[in-house]
Length: 285
Length: 118
Image (cartoon, rainbow over all chains, first blue to last red; front, top):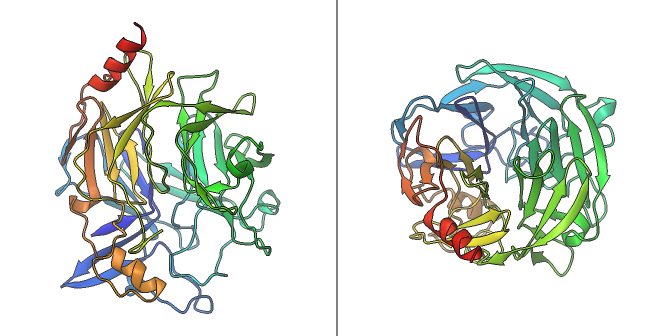
């Protein structure tokens, strides 16, 4: 089995897994399961098994110990028009115990180039058993989303009551340069979006994708976001070096570039980050 | 990139704050993977989920579809695509432990801050 381009978030002893694609062998035949189906007029390719599209959210219970081969992965269906995407948004607001999803992401890898979907915003409220309730809170035609297109392969993170989406690729852009040099801010308390400009000090002025934006809660007045790796598409194309990372203060909404020391990893895209406070006042990611 | 021309990694690096210092973790490279997720899941454990190995074992890919499907044909050696990495001991496991001990800096991190203070 192979699964990829998913996203997971841990809340209250459950880990929730959304989106992505996977394959498995069925009597020796590979089956490919995509995150969502496409309208037949928009794709010349159909998934091999249309009865099991991955239009679900998965969860794993963390309150008990388990082994990877035997742990039960729970599955909760989504409403049929609730987005299931590659590289999705899955933001959590601790204050209201609610997930937000539906903004960013991209369609299965076999889409036609012009197949796209407007974002809509949905909440998922966990019920403590690994499942939960879905609600559409901002539909795709709503004025709050009117000036925003769904970004693909953007850097995303959340912290406090805010979610941030940096860069990425805008499928709707009719020009030759669809890469987005800006950042979108979603305030989970007011449920409103804002578009922020990004400084020229960022790689390609913020038109970057496929890296990581990581929330560090323990530094700065309301935490800091560290942006690292990924690539820029502006010619000459370039992977972004880990020698320098960008740091964003969500309170002042200021950016700065931070030089690192030591042995940075080789530049790359599509990696993952996880971080934790130590007992010594440091934070490792 | 995917397909035969891609370069892939199976490495682990740690960025420690407030120093913004990178430390490379010795990791026996088994299987490169891209598009995985990783999350802290309690104590010092990170759960990695998924990722695919985009080096196709079959050459002669022609269409995008063949290249992508080939990348999904390399089975994940981790059962159900899951693996646990311990950040204190810097070791991999197939087991998740509930109520695990709190994370403490691993040896390379402790060593760095100790020598940085000299």
